[in-house]
Length: 388
Length: 107
Image (cartoon, rainbow over all chains, first blue to last red; front, top):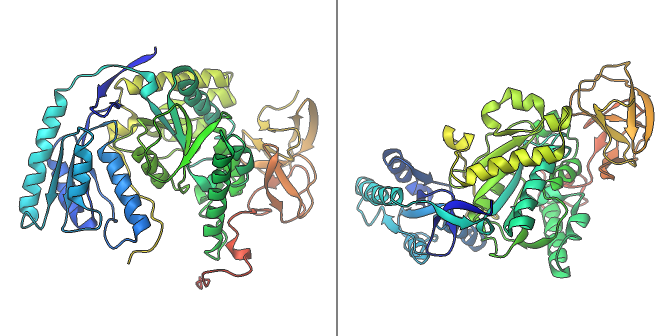
């Protein structure tokens, strides 16, 4: 299969879902967004505590993350809800969405003279988009259009021995055999393996950039004055047998395989439209790294977990794989693909890779993941500096 | 025959990962590269946790995947459970920084 059935966009991307999103630009629009999304079936609310009283690096990061979701390949259209005049500007965001050919609307609570009018306007705009989106049909598209996100979640010592190897096999299958893209993140989880990772860079500039970013994270964490243990590894990582951030990292890097790294991009930035494997600079905090990778335009994500995790995303479907037989049994609703037979049974890593690849093919063609069926999702934009 | 439930990733590693629960007093044959090594387990070690496959001295590097995952903070005899109580990390150690940029807040 070199094609999948997807939703074509005017900007040349092809989605595997056809979502209408309703986004707030500041916390004071969150209630209106949540209420509108509760009324309009199938509309996805995107809310956050940011977008106001932030310094410029955070403003840019918040803006590009929100824009990433509003113009995601899986997004049909976007309704932007602002509270008033904000530094993350609602009209500008809606205009940038419209430039990609997607339906967009900008609602401002102050201009609508209050939340009741704003709620009505938001519902009306989203209702129209959801209905229009339902008329669009899937069409054949080349697999090279796809971007495959990968992330760890509650890693344990089984992760690096089994499920991460299957994840690496599947992502490199998309890159090598179909000309697609892959992306992983979580820079502090390169600690201890950064030299070997940087040596995979396509050129010396990218190699230097990877090492610099790892060093910046170590400096940022050291500047707190505390030992990072407890935050990395997390208590659930340690329950699973992981002892230090280095051990967690060396396991985590297994999921990226050993092929070349094209570039390392800023948090929430669009993944370049050229084949190969990319890194997004993000913290190891799963909700933040997954939110960033979604903003980068990954169509779907494989979450390779040790102990099981609810980690998921509303716009970018997440496929959860584990090789830990205890986790697969304990949290079946968080286990899309159980490959524990490759760790403690008679199966091989190649078998595990095929199991995952088959699920990927089904999901890109429309099969719902467990977290989509259960309506589970989180959204957390990484922040750099203080509020002002 | 070696026990496949104690996995050593690289021959230079000095720890193995338990893929089942191990009990104090068990004797296990572990595959290290092409060699086999017999060790006696000295702790109850749960699924996913690590066991020293050779004597490790205080301060020595703990090696897994052929790389450092930290340093021993005590002597760790072969067959002993290896975890946060006897290993420390070399990254994100703000507690060891000579001059912290942020004044430590009293816990």
